[in-house]
Amino acid sequence: MSEDRRQILGLLADGKITADEADRLLAALGSAGGGSGPPPSATGVTERPSRAKYLRVVVESNEGHEGPSKVNVRVPMQLLRAGVRLSALIPPKAREEVNRALAREGVPFDIGQLKPENLEELIEHLNDLRVDVDSGRSTVRVFCE
Image (cartoon, rainbow, N blue to C red; front, side, top):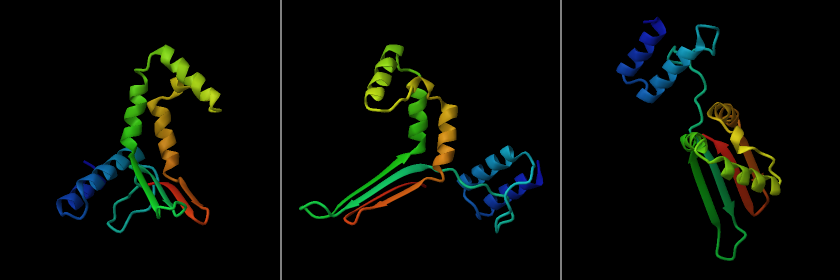
């Protein structure tokens, strides 16, 4: 066992990090391959930025006559991953119909090309996503957390 792994497990045993944090650190350590990675944290353990767990959409509006409206949607990234895996079960004829419907709406996308490995790359890019729209009476925020 490497010294880094021993140190992570020691922090977990001492209660200084949670099991989830230890799991992420061990996964990052395994994929780092011993190269030069990010600098050590205050605990002395090398950490990678955490992966986004949720896609969040928050809407606050004061445009209605019934008072302010608030919408707060939190979509787990695991749901996106599961959906992509389930897309493989869509029959070819249904895929063609969905693709035609998307094209009619101006979305030239082939759902047959949606694969788990493509989704992981998209999710990595979503980690940096932050959209803020403020139109005076309404605010919309889309971000990952």
